[in-house]
Length: 261
Image 1 (cartoon, rainbow, N blue to C red):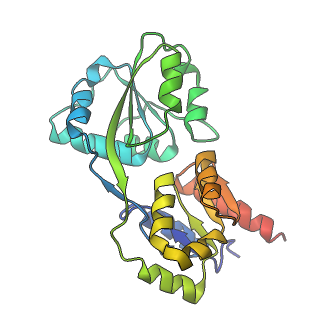
Image 2 (cartoon, one colour):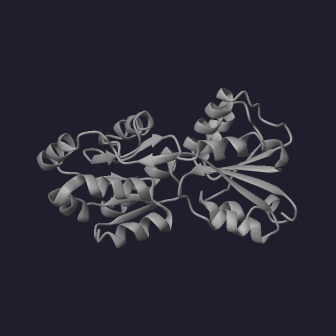
Image 3 (cartoon, rainbow, N blue to C red):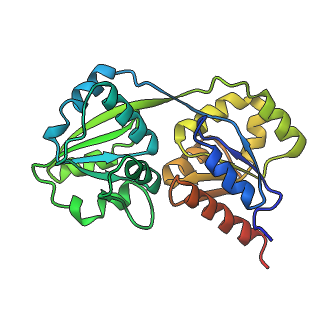
């Protein structure tokens, strides 16, 4: 028996980035539903981003925070006629980002083991002695400062390349609310604080009441704390990363604990 059989699970990833996860959930017997809680759009400061990108050869390390950071950065670089400098080493917060880099032909990517977050990456030995090293961090607007602040404290010269932002959804949420009222939801997957806030804002009063009681799959303590700050009192299922495998592993562990053999 597949171990997510019959569960109605909402996936809130952006359009074009949800199907793989939904297919995996369906293969485990779940009934996935999609609503894009965020839209990935251009950053506000394109000129500032271009200045950093055109200066890439002066850095020793480039760190990618998300798969969106990888795809947006390389699409923009291609449009600007910029090749990747061969001497700049790469690191990625999670497996999804590393896979995107590998898909582009980059094999030597530093990735944490175990949990996939800034804290885990900062524990890795190549990032300990950073005195005089240049580091560029590719991310979305408004990301965490822990990674950059810690590397700067270790002596690195840090710059941010904010290559996208997460905007509020433009899709009509009424279809989601009808499905939720008719069938209920057993869990909601959110993979960013911005996505959580956009979903909460879009749901309206009744939808927020439902969300407050629904188990949520989140990534890391920052998202967990954001849920509690919004008054969401359902179970919080904390995944070790934002990739499909980590999200599904967290769901399966939670469901197995609820339904022991």
